[in-house]
Length: 76
Image (cartoon, rainbow, N blue to C red; front, side, top):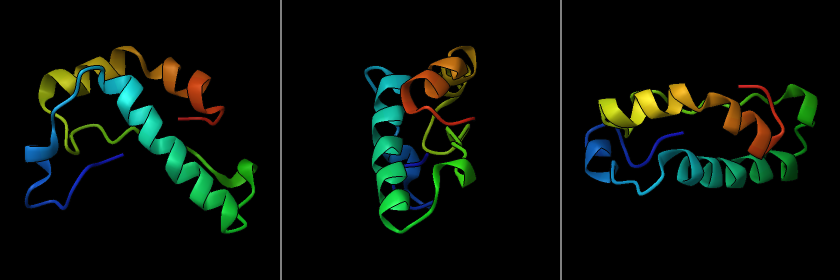
């Protein structure tokens, strides 16, 4: 997960609930992968530690990483 391009991704690092928002955005990516014919068993989720996330966001993601698996049904 990331937001924006690498040169400006930290301007996009504004979250109310980083896990909920990143999981929601990743759900869209999962759907696009499925529509492209990629089977679920070939998909893993990367919450993007450090990408468009400030240190506090990244620590929050690490503390709640199991929520990504639960929300998206794919390994992290």
